[in-house]
Image 1 (cartoon, rainbow, N blue to C red):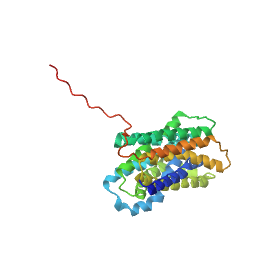
Image 2 (spheres, rainbow, N blue to C red):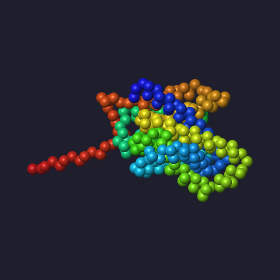
Image 3 (spheres, helix red, strand yellow):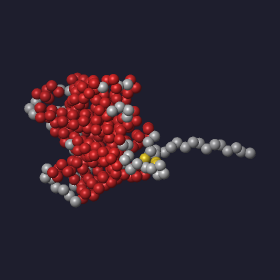
Image 4 (cartoon, helix red, strand yellow):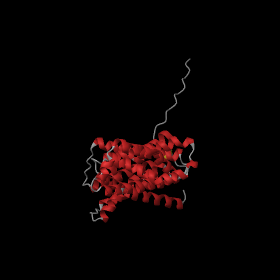
Length: 315
């Protein structure tokens, strides 16, 4: 990757962190007016309607072999995490959800290595760990070194990060021949109808929309759907095509940084210790983006199965 592409990749990564850094807050605001099931499904349904014209205009780009992977991306990579995060944030804080979301690069690397044969340099692996330490340390520093987790709801976020890990690898390895906008449009085309059916059959959305303040909540969810899902996914797909899956997933390390900077801009206290954790995160992401040269040793994240030694003949 040349210098121009590196600058572009980092610019996209920062833009994504700004968009997704506000998503946890928007989810919380949406949950003040709607149930978790309604927020998660509406997020996908609105993104589907927003991208539907694009999908219809690009039907000719769709190949039969792409349909299962696009359906996987839409349902497993978008609809399922949307519901899981909404249910999780009924109990856990957005900061805890942000920390747990930082597990995404680790799971992404594991999936890439075990299922797609990807290899990573020692610097890449070190970067994953340093970035994770930085993200966890930063959030703990903002919460007076407390990290209260409700295990059951926390596991929902962990499951969502595993979904993200599979989705990123599928897009990178199975759908890279499609344009980023096309992948996003058809992914939501597959998931959108499922979300709409779920809203109509399994929620009380019509009643929720009649409640006081419902339109304000709908606005929060619409912003979340259009900016945080539809547009952000198109940008993320572009980043996946430019870089490796782990660097793209490392956007989750930057999300807590964005949340803290937004808080500082709103008048919250800034502590000097934050700078150390900021440095850890940036260093980790930098190392993750380190592309090993041909002479540098590369590592797989799983052990290879050793072939059995041939039996020696006995006299």
